[in-house]
Length: 235
Length: 276
Image 1 (cartoon, chains in turn red, cyan):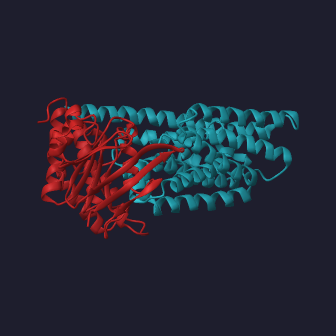
Image 2 (spheres, chains in turn purple, brown):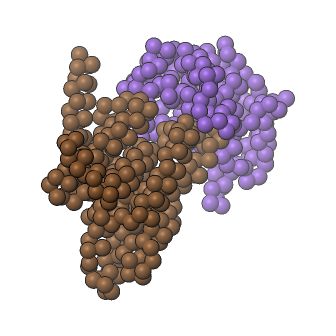
Image 3 (cartoon, helix red, strand yellow):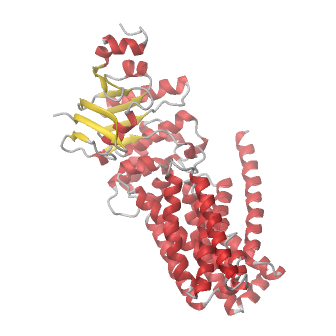
């Protein structure tokens, strides 16, 4: 059974349809990239997957053993985070909150989990560093570690490479690939860059208020829509 | 200085004022960490003006001021929260309008009835003499509640402060936390207002965390540091106010400014040294 199954889902904001006719599934260990222009409904779909917005019609079904709370989420970075006083460890620890129940303080297991994730993204030597003094790429790594602290199964990354320089972007893609391939974590990445989708992910969902394309990345490269968006690069 | 403090502690009304003020300053500084980092500083300012309006009306109608001001401020805090979250109207402009409006209504009500008397003057600029024994008890209880809640919810407050989108996805009811922060801030503002004055109370929320951020780099150290700064500034400010017979609110704010500048210089020096 699929990890996530989306059947004919549609989302509305203030009575206006934002995105509709969504039909796709995400299998275990998939690396799905959701592409589309700004305002094409990507963020709305992410909210739907996270259980923060219910579909107006249709349904999103999770396989057994997965709930919206067990998704590791990497939101788009906010301006207010740039000067936020916090250490990497404090940031990553907050990712373990979903396993905290009603206890008021972090347990040793949560602290160990946080350290493991910091190591996984290669930030162990920066664990006590101030978040606001890290480079953009390091900040994204720390936030990725926080997302990993919340999940063993599924990551949702919202524009993880926005505002990163080319080197940091390549690093980030490499890290995501490694987490997907070697650690068996399913990845859903939102991006406005179809090139990244076609080359990094193994499945592509192209949105433009409705579903324009869903399939494997190699099919996407061959498809008309893929060719159009990739600018003749796909063959 | 110790001598002056001892002399001050020999007056029962000053002991009461110092106890309540210290607790309120601690609450304000802790809540301030979240409020300032969440870009809600204006809410504290807005609340103090609404609080002034409510106190002015209460003093005219003859209700115990706290019993009117606290509920009114809590209601206003929800409104302010909605305003600052709202994308439709410009949040900061709406808050400024509400602040000025509440202040004006307070002044109008007072001037048309009892006239601008010392009570009103005290609400504006603060006076430690305006604290009754019953007020003191209520203040101590409420400050205790704020402090306990803050400690018990510390990890969640951090998450909500740092990243609301992530926290919501993790299942933390962020709206409830925002509402709780706003409620606690309202209570703190009202409690502190009579001592600090409506025009200066928001400094208790804003200054300590900004001062602490000049030096502190971790959330925990900033939190602890701002509580320490708040306590130290409050006591120093009260001593200054006692020695120079200056209004307590203004004295505390002035000490805050001095400490902020000192910390800013220290932080700048440290950054220059570590960059080498």
